[in-house]
Amino acid sequence: MSEDCVFCQIIEGNIPGRTVYEDDDVFAFLDANPLSRGHTLVIPKNHHERVSDLPPEDRAAVFETLGRLAPVVEAAVDADGVTVGMNDGEAAGQEVPHVHGHLVPRFDGDGAGAIHTIFRSTADLSDDELDEVAEEIKAAAE
Ligand code: 5GP
Ligand code: ZN
Image (tube, rainbow, N blue to C red; front, side):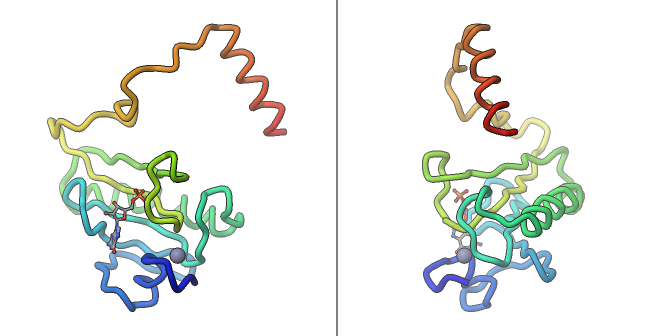
């Protein structure tokens, strides 16, 4: 628990939140500034900033809950799909430094794009560059 963290304070009940699910490991609540009706955040109860900081049990719990709640939230608000996303790191737009997954219900014709619309253009890498990047990541992932 971090005294300075708004999400830790919501878990503790010191800041009000609209809880939609809670167990020993995770907490899910409505986003205060929803992008759509039903916009839900799923967080580990333990305070960690980045996805890579999560110990395996918390990582498993967060992703299991995202997968389980996505269709639940979708059905609850009668949506047609869900954007499941994480802003991981300040450069990626993470504003609250406590890992959180967004479940944003999507509706046919809602006018919002795919995650790809975050970028105005693609990276435009040659086949050789793609091969090189794949090799770099593969080597680091082993
Ligand atoms: P990020 O940009 O870090 O991925 O998203 C943080 C999200 O947390 C935003 O969508 C924002 O609306 C939400 N948020 C920030 N402060 C609060 C709060 O005090 N309560 C709730 N329920 N949501 C919050
Ligand atoms: Zn926290």
